[in-house]
Image (cartoon, rainbow, N blue to C red; front, top):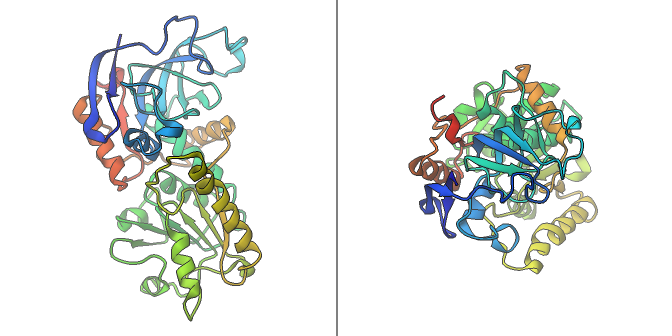
Length: 377
């Protein structure tokens, strides 16, 4: 048995509790679960929107836990305790061994990490540099590597970029990667715009979306911005609907250039960030048919009215991106952005408070929970 944060049913943060007698994540130490040949001792777990979504049950048809009680959490840093040689024939190729700290991003659903021990896949796991903390490594495992992958879609440093949700996990790191590439003008949108102007995020200008509509150019004129943006990165959801409504007005698009002019709209989420999926047909419509339709129409029929639409929710599992992200952090070129209300303790109260913040969608970077063996550090 082991210590773990568990939930006995779907719900919210109030469902979570600490137990001292949850079964270990394996039945035989020499036979780890299929596709999860690594056993780690958990040091830190960084929460993501998917963690709150799984707990809520809104997408249980596709990524719900196989049974209850279940252990939430997917993005993790921990110490390698065991490598199943039945699945990993040559562990020398991994780049790490028993006793090393590794960071890992979930690959089959965000669950299983908030326990004393966890079993994980090797596909998105890599050794953590000595000068990168466990909390920072857990943060960068997902949001950092995703932001790094997104930054590779940017090649023109003269682009004027607007990032809606720049204060969140992906946004706070994407701003850093773009600055690192030489981008000189990045506008951010967040509930806390002052934070976006400070290091390490360092936006040039920022807007509070609770006070101003970020898709209204008049609000940006107060920030001495009168020209439309080249690119909008929507990490909050709902921006495309706003642009459609704007394009139908008499004056047409103002906040961003059209596809004909080189404008583009990039998003990681659908119109509603807190979406629910209750059928295969609905999922296909949500994540495949509608994005494909928008991508084609914006590039052809409406290229003189709308920017190019790109839906990048499904990103590749490329462990080299994670390695490079951690290397940049170890060199001091990027900084892991953790919510300053944490790291939270591995307790019922700590887990509930961490998930409450994640559910609110007002996260300052990434919410982190310490692993039980890391509590006294």
